[in-house]
Length: 107
Image (cartoon, rainbow, N blue to C red):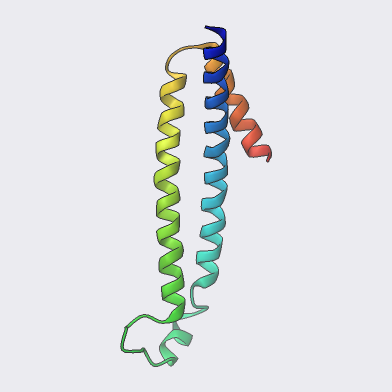
């Protein structure tokens, strides 16, 4: 039906937009992770390691890396979902995926 097709295109459009948002969030987390790293290894070696073994910079970096990993999993799942929808060879679904990607990147 027409309503079903419009809803399908809208869902694919939103999934494509969400894919672009996840991609951007992953880039922001990468930037924060790089800023959390110590400036140099010599500065890190001057500080006595605590009994836990990891300093505060390493702890922050680890959690940013965990966040990036979770973002990556969501990005891969969304990417494959959009790809499978496009592989239905429906022109409207294809245009919805393209429009969602463009709008998501623009936003």
